[in-house]
Image (cartoon, rainbow, N blue to C red; front, side):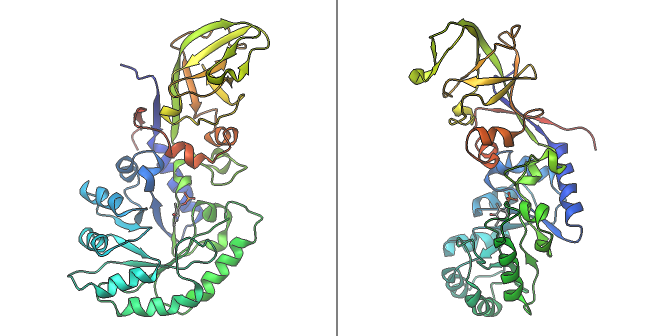
Length: 362
Ligand SMILES: *Cc1c(COP(=O)(O)O)cnc(C)c1O
């Protein structure tokens, strides 16, 4: 049975995008960020496609455990670290790298005396003001970690950018120099760059890079598409027309009747909605491909359906292919039409959407 809503994942594109990371940062080790279910593409599937990276990064301990239990032996860093002793024990047991960003974590580490040690990424807050030690606190934290029997030496050092997606924002340069000044003289490997850093800030490349969104073929910048940056989109979201009908001037379409027909036209109903992860706030006029050609969204997005104006697609009929994003319709463009970022769209594809993997032999 062909499902109504389905996402085609081109896993060869993951491979291509990884080679783009390597060509931008030829001297860096790659920590592939596969948190949030591989940005909505499937944690294990993406881990499989990226098997020969130097490390994976996930946000939470349970994501790391899922990878271990599926048999992945790669190095895995947990970006949010641990919150209590119990999570620390899990990190140690499953041999996951911990990001250490707070003094509470130092206390937990110092109080622990179980067998085993884990690798640590000590996080410096250079201006994101989310996780990490301030520059003035870093040296003391580093020394404390050095004394911890539970910590593998040397300690690695990292920071995260707040505005790297804005190529004109000097804040990134300030973050880079604060990081470099603060870690000078400390031993251990260094890591700063996310996708925007890798693609836009050469100064941010260091021992390790941490690409996320670019691995999925999506641009980290607001004004470009992955394709324009030499990336290949991994996900395409499809469905089909399930009804086509004539509507007349004055008819309203959808909940709230917010869209009023100005002149008679042909209306198409597509089996996709916010229950599948299509954005509820996509504006009237958001492009949708019907049989590969653009038509505008009209009316409100509902849970299971959207409506499109088929004025220019007179021959379209129920069963015809619809593309919500994918080839010919960048997810970045849909994100702009819905006042969001493409990260939320790919992460938000729901359980109901059937996944179809596309690979060719390598
Ligand atoms: C999510 C994340 C990344 C990857 O960011 P992208 O913008 O998707 O490349 C890198 N580092 C940290 C700490 C993150 O949380």
